[in-house]
Amino acid sequence: MAHSFWDHLDELRSVLIRCVVAWGICAVAMFCLRDYLFAFLFWPAQPDFITYRLLPLTSRISALTFINIDLAAPFTIHLEVAALAGLVLAFPFLLWQLYGFVAPALYPKEKRAARWIIGGGTLLFLAGIALNYLVIFPFAFHFLSTYQVSPLVVNQISLRSYVSTLLILSLVMGVLFEMPMVAWALAKAGLLHADLLRTYRRHAFVGLLILAAIITPTGDAVTLLLVTVPLYVLYEISIFIIRKTP
Image (cartoon, rainbow, N blue to C red; front, side):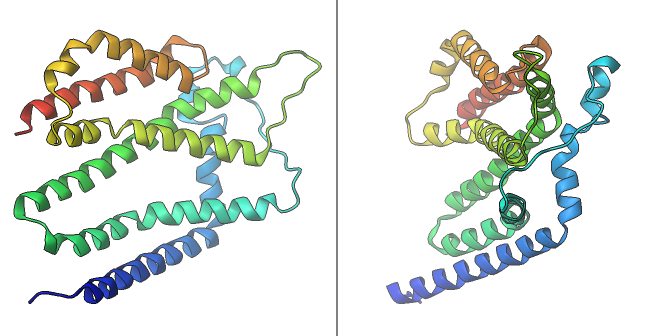
């Protein structure tokens, strides 16, 4: 039975309401779990974080405190972080709801492609966030928090600066890890071919190396390679996916 425009609009409204309610419930839950939420958020900056075991004992941070100069900042940051954490927690449900809305209008092949994009894109995005949380940000934080232009300048890290840097880097890495999904979509649209990517392999590696140097201002070769290698592997995976794309 065909549905009218208003029926589809009403169904969309119901889907959006369910998504907002789910996000709100998850955000409230994260807000109430403040201690666990911020313990997770501050874990990469702690001296006993797993990556710091690779560093000399003398170069580890012995004590860590953050400063705040804005009266409302702790509360607003708490709200913002809880909202983002709630969104991440509710994200699978939100995607399922949106897919359920558009699925009836898709052909079987399009449904399989949509499930592939949703599942693969989500996993790649989470993998990028995990790489940043476990590797990139701890080393970047260690470098930036201990870097001094003069003994007269004492580094005091603000709460907002720490949180915003962590979240922005996580978002950047999550987006960069979507490279295979973007390449697949462009290939399906006829805008990208595997031969082109194979031809410019060396150029791509140099470009990814420069991009990794921008993302990781630590200046050491180990961190640079820890970022460049996964990105280049994703580039090769993109070539493989495009070759298999009909």
